[in-house]
Length: 68
Image 1 (cartoon, helix red, strand yellow):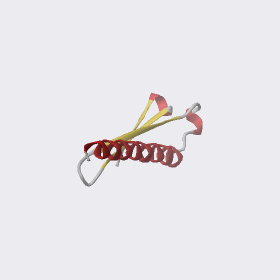
Image 2 (spheres, one colour; image 1 turned 135 degrees about the vertical axis):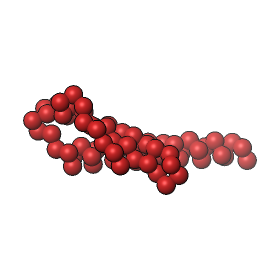
Image 3 (cartoon, helix red, strand yellow; image 1 turned 180 degrees about the vertical axis):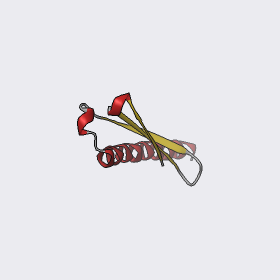
Image 4 (cartoon, rainbow, N blue to C red; image 1 turned 90 degrees about the horizontal axis):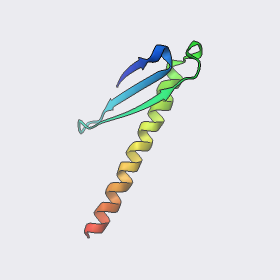
């Protein structure tokens, strides 16, 4: 996992490399950088990345069902 903080602590970008070498990235944003909490931001970004993976899995399954 790699993460980068942008805009003075207002935005967080997190990227994970899966065992297949595919990468998935997600972001979290804060309104007030003085209340920036890295652990909370990482948790939000992780949940968003997991949601993306489920969306891709759903697409793959629908596509696979069309080929049968």
